[in-house]
View 1 (cartoon, one colour):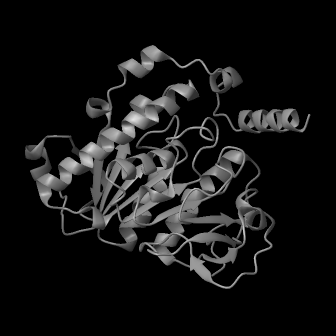
View 2 (tube, rainbow, N blue to C red):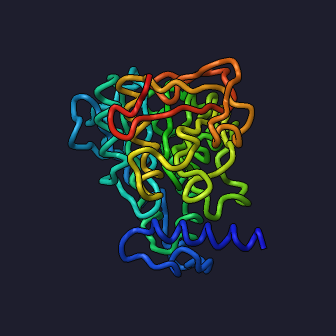
Amino acid sequence: MALLVTILFFGVAAVSALPHGITPADLWDKTIDLAAVARYNPDTQNIYHLYTRLNPTVSQPLLLGSQGLLGSTNFSPNRRTIVLLHGWLDSITADFNTVLIPAILSAEDVNVIGVDWSAGAGTINYFTAVTNTVPSGVSVARFISWLNQATGANLNSYHIIGHSLGGHQAGIIGRNLGGQVAYVTALDPALPSWTSNNERFRESDGVYTEVIHTNAGNLGYLTPLGQVDFYPNGGIGMPGCNNMDCDHSRSFHYMAESFRSGGFTGTRCASYLTAMTGNCFLWGNLQMGGLVPKTGQSGIFYLQTNAGPPFSRG
């Protein structure tokens, strides 16, 4: 009975946050649209948008294998490169990108590459989008390998950030690059269809891996996945939010603010359960997010935020 109650609660919770026009059947019918999966070719359909301080608002396209086009862009191997992966039903115009890109460029002179994989993520059949997450990640890893070979850039200057389905995809990319990416961040990585999925985010997917949980147990993954996992406000029920979609999105708003000002300081917890209740009194603090990977750090951390910007309490 307890399991049934849990399943029913999870179903109602997820359905309540569905985008307008999407029905419960679209999410919970586990029939994968195999034709849609077969049609999706990330090597040709993923679109890579380059933003730099020289072109902060209008992107320059990058194409896998097109070195001539690459030479006409502002990409520089002398800068760090941050790669962004959106989630289900999103695209390059998603809030995830419009919030993060200006925050990143205001904080540091870097290459920002927004990956538009909406050809794979844009299906209303959620389970098809889950299936497409894996080949998309493999393809993005191929793109990064080609880009580095063409320009001399190195994985130790990369930061890969993904939200929701993109959170798991960030890990898949890092994994397919041998776990050598300096910094990999999953922002409230998706829960539905990932608990038994061996392709989910892993702590070994980068040199330093970090997860920020803001809707844990509903739209976002419940248990720790990275070397470091943060549970702001206990990982659910973000101040200033009144629905799960808002909670889910808070992860990238917190990340954006961490780029601009840092400030989010977590207290070490004994387990994710104590993090979710806020009963964390172990020695040692750690900054959440930010520009620099906290290489060598590990653990679970709790912090509180304000209801609106600035979200950080210091």
